[in-house]
Length: 329
Image (cartoon, rainbow, N blue to C red; front, side, top):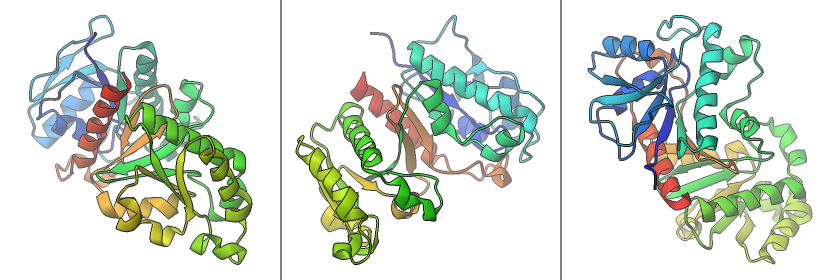
């Protein structure tokens, strides 16, 4: 069997992504890890940080089969659109960012990489360049021709997936349809089995309304949409519990034997997860035909080049991708 190999994209070149890659290189990885970025960018940032990292050039013609030694990093050189000023966004580099993602994603589809790990991008500067971009998740869904993907964040001891993601609150109730809830639940259940090796996942499902609607007095979504959909899926053998009030679901009583929580919207589930594991959490895109994990934080332009950053989230993202590949392949 060919050695597993992983792609790492540093994201926004003016942010902390390049710093994370360089600091990560101090520790040896269990698999070959290929940073897809500009070699000159990494050289400049290494000098700024005062770190010594041996940047080892690689190309698709000769992928490495063994991990890079400590204090070294494999780099698939990808040209910048313009010189980078640390901490300052430049829309001239938007196409560079998307090229690194395309190389990583296509490499996963082609079998060159077992998975990809992404550092944060800056959505607004990509859109300002004239390229419509709503995020990593949507970009990779388009690249892989995937109709429905699911956003899940995880930290040690807790996984939270979302039925809806980046929607205004006033639009959420209308977006939670039986069809959408069923699709998301099926993807979550299947990927917990296939990519996390959990034979019979136990999933806790949040209600939408306070007190899960309180018998219809605080909204009927639980009665009309959520419960009938869950009951239909339970009849197929899925272990689904809910809809449960979100204010009490996130307690040891419920979470102790839970494999994942399915929240109805972004700020219902993620504040709890980030309180529990901020800086040591990972964003996983479910439903893709490839493995993709990401850090749980932004580009932190003000910290780029300072050396005052924590690699914890990237390390968890790497560990998660490695574990998923071991299960999935």
